[in-house]
Image 1 (cartoon, helix red, strand yellow):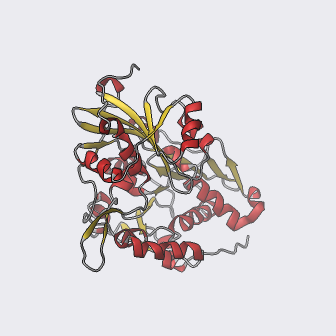
Image 2 (cartoon, one colour; image 1 turned 180 degrees about the vertical axis):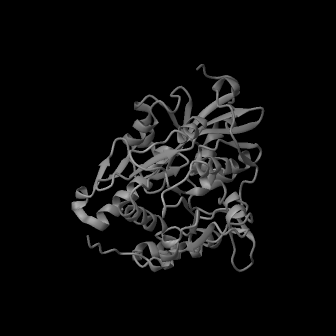
Image 3 (cartoon, rainbow, N blue to C red; image 1 turned 120 degrees about the horizontal axis):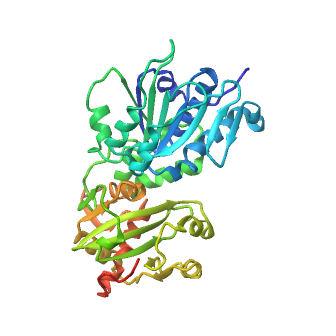
Length: 411
């Protein structure tokens, strides 16, 4: 079989590496995820007995990321004739190579139940040999160790185990930097790529990144140049990412909050308050979904009895959520309301459940705008990738109105 590939040369070395850990940090739009998907399609076709596990923190996000990327790779390589070589089970999210029955499956590590399921993964033929962790900074080190421990046992001659991690390097204090970039290890291959290395990037995206260079230079370092983020200018530092009991009975009161989006992320959060501390219990964080689709996704995930504070500029969407049975109401907007909401958030210790990957990613890089001439931070948030932060701002609406009631709702 002759295959003609379109590839970026910068990924040649990581694609050829046999190190156990291939750790790929890069800017948005660098092509690292598209290359990884194409790389695994070819590897699974070429090497019998290999099987791939694709991991995201939240399992549902695999469908629109790793699963979609692998399918896109099939279309790029084979066009409409991909079904001759691959079988796709869309409902269960399984890809299987028809010639050797190698498979790719998809899992999350949101909670202990999902982590335990990783321990019982089996395949038709061969063993689990490859793991792709997309948006790896979403995972805790404990998540990673559980995954790493799955790759063990003797393999046939010529085979090897490998974990590939792809991510934007949000924070210089992240465990991935400490474990893989700040120490020398012969089992580790590290790599950096940017959108400037991607010869397939479209001009509109290139212009978008150039705009970010102007409006958010520090964010551009991370999402444009793939450099590690720093703590300077962060708006919120009073947070902790940890597992906690999400039983509604333990909170003084709870609310839902939502920032609407389509091209930007639509973010819904369930937020509890207890003893003056804020707990983000769960989130729904999706883009390119219509309101009807999001309402279906939210069914059973969020308590409809709770007040849902939403962006007041979207009255039509608020009415749609009301018709769906939610107590959706607009969050009050007035001059200075954004700063007032931030001030209220700063007065709380914020606990974020590890499953809330969107909020975690955003809060680690939500910054004040910086004056490039003076180097001073301005009293103005950078309006970029702040959808979950807007949701958090709306969540303290009840408190701002002075209408907090303890144990308001019965569950």
